[in-house]
Image (cartoon, chains in turn orange, cyan):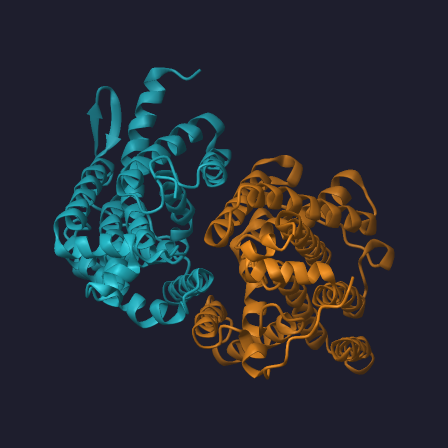
Length: 319
Length: 290
């Protein structure tokens, strides 16, 4: 309940922001922070709640981005219809990769590697076929009407990404308070025990990767609409996969607010180093890498984990 | 079908590249076998080693092959230090943590290189860069041939080290039974760091053999990392013979696949092998089922 109130307060604060602030810089910063929160939340659902560490979440992001771009450019679909199709397709790719990996019992490092390899396969495919624009990439036609998923001002994009992020928050709240969420966390904590207690481990993990992939695909669609452009390296390269896992690790995995906190901290850090060092290439990523090492070494439970007081375990409510 | 006169040089070329892949993968498989770490920073460490060879050539005029006695110990020290000071402290006994820490290290190394040396692709000019020899009608570049021989020698040295020395016995003991090794008085932390150091030393050697025929830029390691993972998985995690054979196989697959499917789509063969082996035979071609 407390968390629901916090999320509502957060949503209201962000929603009112465009009425108070007119600066494009600030709005863009908030948009990018929410976008990082969405990617982080998608990864968090699979890794933080489900214990399955993916190193290739770009595969879902890129699929969403390309689905939206191809449907609009090649088939003339409406952008919102393309969004729906992209999210479904992202979930389907998640189901495919999840079914293969979990059916054959890939865990831990092996699962991380196989997701990475899938992202590379998709990158090579997108780089090869003219259908996806090959190495040149695809440009989205510019529009200014909300019916085209394009907005004259940043505020429109802010509301869209806020909506996506709230959906992801909703999923984490549901995971915390539902029977399915309890199953998923049981699988994370001890797969054998969960199976012995009658949890269908395969289906629980499959559900998590599908939800996670669908949210990631929504992030990909947002990227395409916001930047009007996608190419194989942006879509399927390792940068997106890393971006998705950084925020929850810094903020705290397996919590609702970890990815948001992590995204805020990382973006603040990024802006700080940009002011300090200028736009020198690589500097912010050096800092991010160092933060990742430091977090895992000193605060493996993230910022939230470090501050959270020990609370008594709550009973799991009936579904 | 392809004609023999095209296929044969392609296979030979694949074997020469594959030997260097094998050397890189040997380091990775040693680290995995002993520490059960998947070292994500392996590609970035190779990139650092390549820059080392490049700058030794640029500033001191050292031939890449002459850099061997400098680069191998230097990379060993880097590896020993990283394991002792960073990775060992971060693990908290969980595989995922090590994965993330080595990923973080790779980010730091790659982007530090990008910051210091920019994204320019650099090459080394040697008198023999463009010379070739004729092997049964196939023209093979001299540096590639040297790399093939050098990689095999380095692999042999590594095998002797692991099978004949006290350190090698300690490494194998820990790989088999960590608790037991500790109980008989082996300094586990030291042997961990030695293994990591030797794993990176392999990269120092690989860099010296690679650079005369290759190039270096901050992201060059990315091209090698998935290939090295594929070889290690194909050969069986922790198996030396498997890494050698896997390296040669992958080298040939890449070379022939590129001939068949073209430059861009040719890479896909490696990743598909990787996925298929992970799914259906995760113990590798040579590993025993655990």
